[in-house]
Amino acid sequence: MRLYLSTLGKNPIVFEIEIDKKYCAKTYIEDYKELILYLEIKYDPNHTFKPVDLFEALNNKIPKKFQRKPNCSEVVSVASKRRRVEEADKIYFCGWRNNPTGYNISEMNIEKTRITFGDKIAAMCKLKNVSSCWTNISSDEYLKKINDLYSM
Image (cartoon, rainbow, N blue to C red):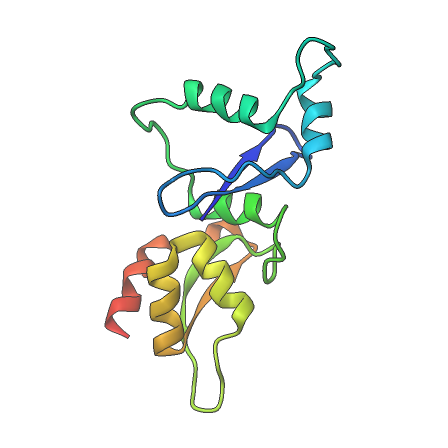
């Protein structure tokens, strides 16, 4: 599982943190120096900033009750800043494609499905050989089709 920390603005910086099954964060941050620059942390001879400091600060700021869940397009958009996502410009879910005999769901499509809908849906797509379909046109997004997977 991954946690994405994203800055705001037109060109956000996205930091990716691995989270294990017990919801514990791995303390290695790939872009550690970029994070230090972004947070504008200055050198302090009395205290060396460590990733654990960031995690403790984050832990103290995480609300007890989750207020807003990102939509599919936001998840794909943020994840594509850190991961190689199939057709990264196509962030709007528009349905499922039942692949014909001889054609298989691509590993990249499985990964995009996993990022957006989770491991269970991605595994079901792989088992049924069904690809998630995406568009770059927001008005074509059709989230009601998500549950159609169960009837395929």
